Length: 280
Image (cartoon, rainbow, N blue to C red; front, side):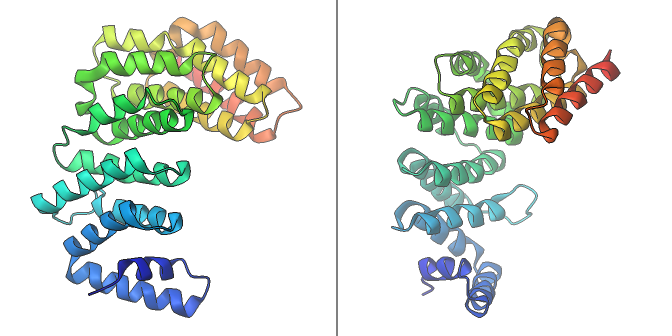
């Protein structure tokens, strides 16, 4: 019986020989018994004492369950993984490991019905810990990317979650996660009915405020990621910012002219302006 904890631990070893040996053992096992490997990873994500092993197991599980990976996952294993990963999402105390769990859950939602997923995620939005609320919003963003159809019936709940998350009273990590969730929804539903689309377009000024506040607080990396999302949104759906055109243009011009900011940030602001001009 393979001890997955040892194998996964050695996959992160700084010793090249040890790591390569573990890679061979893992790949051979995955090729011959993929369902057993997937279940073993699911158990590690939930039960291993070392957070690095839990995080690595999530990464390996995500690679297996990606919809682009044509491996057939039997029903029992799929149900086991859904339950295991959802349990880990609710119980993992380390935010960085929880994010990797989210990255593995979203493709599971694209592969098979996952009715228990959204009730748990929306329930997590009421958590007293802002880091858990951020994780729930991050997972919603990922679900929109992989399986937006399961979110559509819950659009009112998503709208309410984004509205609360973008507000000034929330910590910056929650506000940025809300911006990402909003962008992911809009990018994934560009053909949504106009009523739903218009409701989310009203968040554009609040999203700009998040970018501005992130820059003012020195969180340029987060601001860059948010600007990239907005550029993608403008590219895919030029009408997104039509009603807030002047606010968006004014904000981007201020960012582009701010010599105190990193060149990469100012460049993203210029790219946003260019995208807006090309879209009009």
